[in-house]
Image (cartoon, rainbow over all chains, first blue to last red; front, side):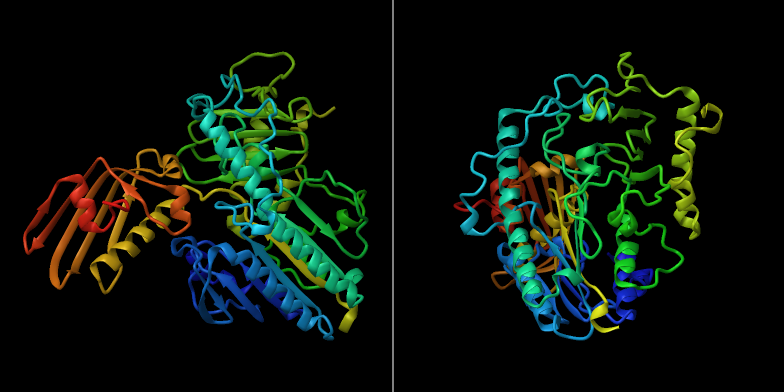
Length: 381
Length: 136
């Protein structure tokens, strides 16, 4: 948060872009970790943002005034204020933009007492990757993990069910917002965008509940959109990343996207799955060298290639091995899961080199790097 | 423009446990808050946690907690340059995120420069700091 603020990056965000495009903008809930600044960032007309984790989410900046907040009631307060914001503006000539960020599905999973009985008996799905029996193909930090204990498993099942209960508040908010918009005949004139900041593993590959790992549970998470021109009930398989959110919102609102933006709007493929989408890979990375070591992952349509700072590698064929049980670069030879050849591995390394550094120059080269051919030129048919 | 423009509603759900990358800050903040209440310091005491295996902090296990307070007030007495060193600390993570601090240690030592005070007995040290479990 401090770095983002100190570098002046708040001066140009999707809030300022949409504000400049005549939107009334409102921010509700979590802004960033360690947010304590009493001022309101540029571009926001309505501001209702929690403080950071160091303060325990115990206060909220309500339009510049610090107010106390009961953590258990935070999501309910956020939803209520966001609904009030929408109700006050839905009859206006100007469109509104509500950014509503909930803490649901994050420990300690606060939920309404009315939902205490919901999801009784729900637990973490017991796939083959849960408490994985054989991790000899995995990087050393996974190999060093002991199998999960019964206590670990029980705690994760409890967290999993509580997380589902906490999401009922989000579900209720969506219902209330939809009812409001329908009553004002604005539902067909409104885009909904639903996503999360990251995924989460619950016992897969023996990893106790957490995040920040280069596996599908952590890096492949939902992005759901609805609105004018977007057909319902369809799933798009094209690769999209968090960096696409801002330009997508700008496109939806008819705002101008600055030239420094690396992401691209997904609106064309949301409307029509056959729209051109030349991207062949996106980068996921973790730049804290601790446990596990820093890693960079090339996420392809049907595979992942990961390199760690300590030299270890992982490659998973997501078509034949969606649960990532067989690391083809883990030293366990299995003809069912062949590793990429040397030339392809070298090519993946080059792509990671470019993708992990391209944004620093502030040019558009990241898009070109994402759109590079899937295979090295020499091995193309 | 008017209603020809589209409304936008974005729902973002934050997922996960506390990252052990931000957990030290949370723990330091909670301990500092409690010490500030116990000792009436004008500013938050300086608290630093360290661990050789940071992910274990998610389970509430911390190798070392260091506390320094330039000036503190204990029952009317002014203490200058207080330093405490807690080893093999266990904190209830679920309690922590609820805002409650429940600390146990295998060793705790406390030294005050003026007036000279030295406490090395574990529970007495925690009690002096106001960090002993309820009931102590």
